[in-house]
Length: 262
Figure 1 (cartoon, helix red, strand yellow):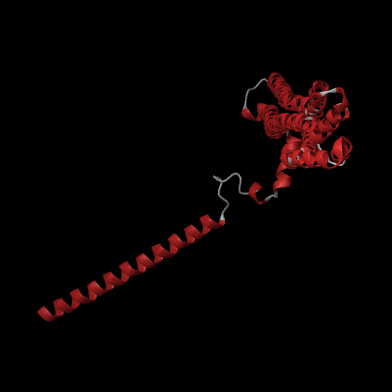
Figure 2 (cartoon, one colour; figure 1 turned 60 degrees about the horizontal axis):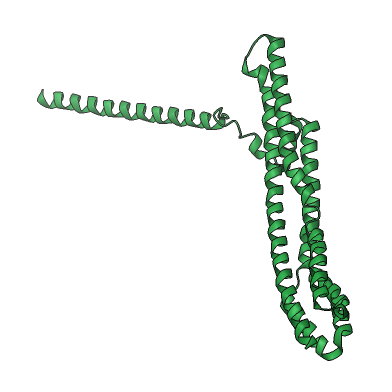
């Protein structure tokens, strides 16, 4: 009897273990199926998953259309014109940058070798505002050093005006781009309030369009102003450096002429 009871208990224990393992396997399979289904379904928490596959230029084009072509076009026009002037100024200033110390040394050798006329030929063949200033000074060498200094000062102001040409237009576009963006903001908000008045409701779907136009135009205007401001500051710093070198080279030039006269 004892052996019979023990056998029954062993058989029942094995059946219970088998049932538990079967239930565990079924639960694991069900869990894996649920996880697979969740992975296959698109997640609603990632609203940018569809737009992230689009190229950057396509996203910019979309935002340009959403912001309103009439305002976005004017902001982009400010960027294009401002960049065109800035690039032209940068090229001009880089071409105007010369090695003034070498020019002064070559000028001194030319004065010793061939006199004022050879020095004038050297300045004529050298590009840059410093060489032009030296040429004007040499042209009045026979009138005395005082007149040479006056000519250098006067023509230096002319060359400085040429270096600063176009900066006022860049400054205008820097101020104009955010103003156009803010104008689009105001008009977009007015459109949003008109939509609220017409619908008699202040739900987000009614005002979303006008607010989107307002924000996009403002962002575009600020981005354009930031880009042009960086170029503007670089150009101003470049002009200051060239003017400082011009003043230093002019002093050395007058010293060379005074020594040559002696």
